[in-house]
Length: 81
Image 1 (spheres, helix red, strand yellow):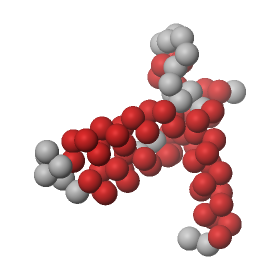
Image 2 (cartoon, helix red, strand yellow; image 1 turned 30 degrees about the vertical axis):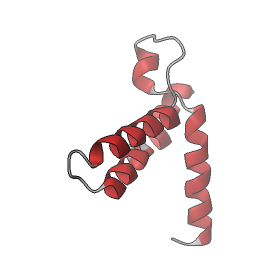
Image 3 (spheres, rainbow, N blue to C red; image 1 turned 180 degrees about the horizontal axis):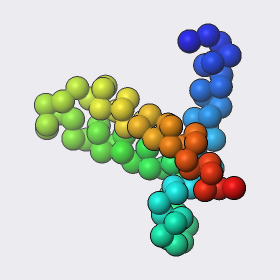
Image 4 (cartoon, rainbow, N blue to C red; image 1 turned 90 degrees about the horizontal axis):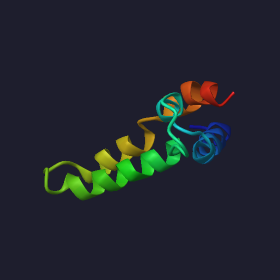
């Protein structure tokens, strides 16, 4: 990944805290969690459950942190507009 691509990735990741999860918004949930909040909680769950389930914690946490990346970048942003 070149420097520009890395900066763009980090900038987009930073903005995930501003993007509310679309499903909650569509269901009329007041104060829905952001994509960043959701991913953070999932990463904590992955950390807590990986060892008891004999899974690779690093892989589980990595997947948890980026699993909504595409949704955050495209689908979730449409709901904000």
